[in-house]
Length: 187
Image 1 (cartoon, rainbow, N blue to C red):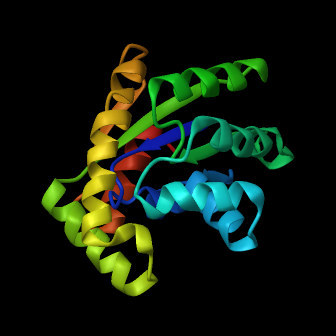
Image 2: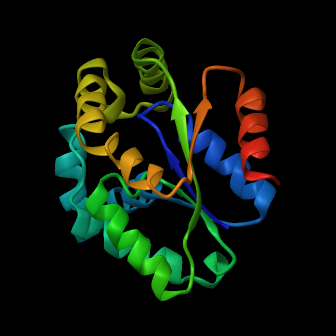
């Protein structure tokens, strides 16, 4: 089962994706984690990504796609994966759809985590304080939310045509949101 988690920065994709992947016994493929690891390791992709991340901009498709293809080809992802953070645009969605189709697979569910902008800013500010993430400062967070609305939100229409999009109210407790996701996914 391949599941895509969509939602603005701070919507809870990381938390819910980890819970879902554990419950289903499949890996969670997180572009943010992959990119942060590349940045920390000082790889060429990491240095390139850092320039974009510091400005609150999205890392270009070509960089992300190579990281994702490697993850989808891994033995652990043969039975499925939870995708968190990619695809972010309709063009990227086409690339993911094509990559999965080459393996005889498709996205089974697209879960859109709905959270108000006010709550997102609050969550990102709290996360910046506890995790010391430069990409969660108030100014950068606002930029990230603008970029999300402009580039990522239209992705919902791409998947809505296939009837795979499910809106998940993500303002309850972690357990409440996880329960709603479990109800939708059916496991």
